[in-house]
Length: 363
Image 1 (spheres, rainbow, N blue to C red):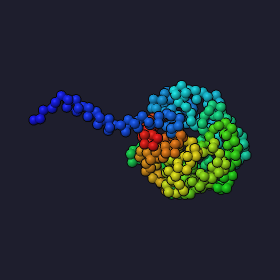
Image 2: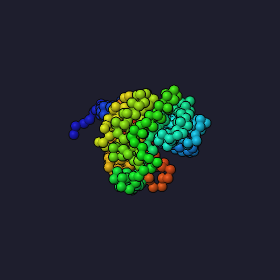
Image 3: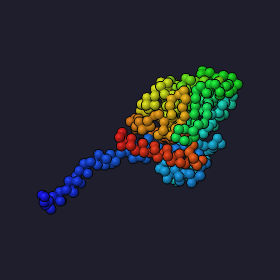
Image 4: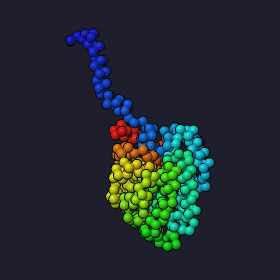
C-alpha cells in the first residue's frame, strides 16, 4: 500500500476547499448581487388590509415579511382616518402603496345618473387626501352590472373557491338589473366623464389611478345583466389609456387572474400586457392570482395550483423592471381560517420566494 506523506494530507483539504469554492461561487455571487427584496426599485410583495384592522393584524403582517399594503377604507373615510391608518401601519414598518374607497362604484357615477357630480367630488377629496400623505395610487373599476360568480365549489385539492361558468350565467342568472339597458356607447360616455373629472385631480395630487379589468372578461361577458362592460380585453384596456390621454398618472391594476381567465381571447396574453405596459410604468398594482383554466368555465386557485406558471409571470415583471405592488387578492377558503391568515401566509410566502428567485435570475 502506498504511503501518504504529511504534505499530501495538507493538500487534500485545500483541494476540497478550492473545489467547494468553485462550486458555490456562482451562488455566492448571485446572493451578493441580488436586488434586495425591499428595495423601492424592486417589485413589491403586498397584501390587502382593512383600514380598521387592529394592531395585532398589522404585527402579523410584519411577522410574515410584508412591508407594503393596499388599504380598503370605509365609505365614510376622512383625512384623519387615512392618516391614523398610515401612522399605525408605519409603526410596524409597513407603507400604504394603494389606498381605496368605493366612491367610484356609485351607480350615479357609473350609470350617468343625476347626482354623479356630488359622488365624484367625494372621490376627488379622497384622492387629494392620499396625495397629502404621499400615498402612491388608488384603484378603480367600472362594471356596475357585473356577476363575478355562478357558484362556489370545493376544488380538487379540497379548498372552497369561486367558480364562473359562462353558460350557467346566461341560462340561470342573466337578467336586466337596472331601469334600462346600458350600451357600450352609454358606458364609454359615463366612464369618460368620470375620468375627465378625476384624472386632473390625481395628476395635481401626485396619485396614480389604477384601472382593474372586468372580471370575468372576454366578449362572452361583454354584456351582463343589461349593462355593457368595457375592459374585457386588450382593446378596451388600450382605449382606456387613450381616454386618459396617455397620462403617466393613469395606469392599471393588472389582475393576472382576470387576464388568465380570458386565455387566448384577450387580444394579448398576460405576458404581452406586461411587456407592453410594464416598460411604460403603466402597471401600478397587480392582483397576483391564478385560475384552473380559461373560460368558458374556471375556478380560482392558489397561485401554485392553477394553469398559469406564476414564476414565469414574476420573471416577466422583473424583466421590465416593474415596481408595482403585488397582492394575492382573492383567498381560497381553508379549514379553520376565518380571517384568511393561513391563506395569506401561504400566498405571501410563495410570492416572496418567487420574487427572490426572479431577482437572482433576472435582477
